[in-house]
Image (cartoon, rainbow, N blue to C red):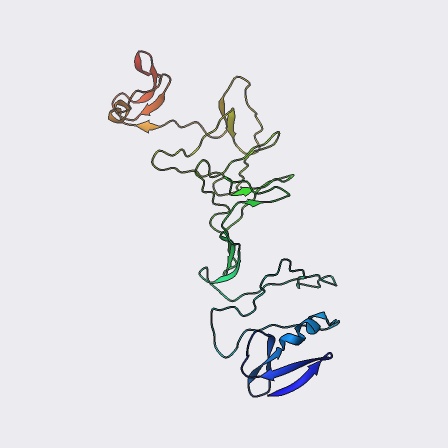
Amino acid sequence: MASSAINGFPITQTTVPVGSYFGFDFWTGTEFQTVKILSQNLGLALSQNYANTNLKLTGNRSHDHDEYDVFWGKVKTFRAEASIAPTGSNGSYNFKSFGTTASDKGFVISSQLSTTLETYGNNSARFFSEVGFNGLSPTTGYGVISTGSIAGLRGQGAVYGVIGDGVLAGFYGVSSGGYAFQAQTVTGIGVFASASGTGMAVHMDGRSYVEEYGLGAGMASTAIFQVNSTTRGFLPPRMTTAQQGAISSPAIGLMVYVTDGVEGLYINKSTGWTLVA
């Protein structure tokens, strides 16, 4: 065991840490050993001004383990301040963790109640609570609360940009003058909605219209729903006579196209199904 001093306070070098000390590992040329600052000198050590120096903390390199490599106990505030602007691709602060797959947890933030955030080795992240963006506070019942001058939420992914799973609504958009929800695509599907059981795939509460991109025909003031196109038509549900007859309590005005028997477009009147054309 050897003793020396750094910046005026004594330290002790030992291969086996004893007691509660502030320590770090160093390479002697043949093995890793632990430098520990004695508890009676800890106050002096932490009060020194280490200007123009770097501090590197590492865990025990003699074996891999899942315990704490660096532990900050009973610390109310941890503050880090960058002195210069980042250059090139370097950030002011960088957190790099081990992992290459979705099962490798790289970074975890948690409180006394539960885990808040987990990041994984494949650059994915998972939030376990409500999230607020653009100055909005998280609100119970909503996964993401966001507002923006153009779009509150934008998702872009190889498979799905955004997946919404809620008890009341997967996505909920409110707009005072623009679009509550806007979907635009070149060759894919602008909006794809599916439901199972007693769910509802699409629910539009208010006046709605669908038109070809760039047509700009607008919507008639007396219409609740309108379709505008100069190259395609409206296709009603198609079914057999047996399937039409199996509809329980059809609503007045219901429209279907029957493909067998007396083929044609039928509308249900108060007097029953009537062939329109």
